[in-house]
Length: 301
Image (tube, rainbow, N blue to C red; front, side):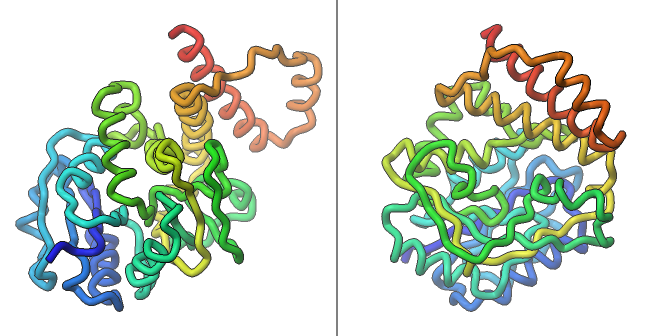
């Protein structure tokens, strides 16, 4: 009998204490094992994870090696191998609440008009975030909210799930795979090694809208997103900030939304920068770099 859910965990050189927590949370799911499968995609790790990570506790678990480095190739391999009608992408730093799979299955049945959805992402920080980092935590994939919301329109980021814990119908995932495999630029979106390019997950979610379905966020779905101390360093967050703004413009261009050509008021911008604190100025300048670089690439092509 086909599983109802395929859990796809893509990982590259995972931290042992993180992947242990991820797998322990999956092992504790309230949804019976016979109703879901687990695909661990070893994305070009230095060591073969099949010889180090024990999945024998799950009768429908498989180790799959994908030697092409990058989160997108790893996701595509997971989509190709998945057997279920509903796929869940569980990153190697995502600790699911024990009812995550059970609630996902119920949502898939109750909301047939939604093709991609997610839930609340709590931060599991190794150290307490400094006060100055608070405005930027959302860019680390931290989302907490009280009400469900959904939309069937493109570019509605409030209803678009993050990659962490994202749930998609197989028909959406397959359509996305077809689009990406025929478009090298799309294939380049998202993490690859030390690159901080992103938005492959957003492209996947938006594919639901391409098929006339919607995207949604459900408060009952919850996971903890593990965060090492290094992700709270200013240098990392600035690079992330720049990469996200760059990636959003590149993704928008794939979907017919070109960047504005309006010229900025240089005098007003200089005054605005002068009033900012040094740290806010660095983040603002990173954003502007990302936008400028992406705009230049889009207009050139």
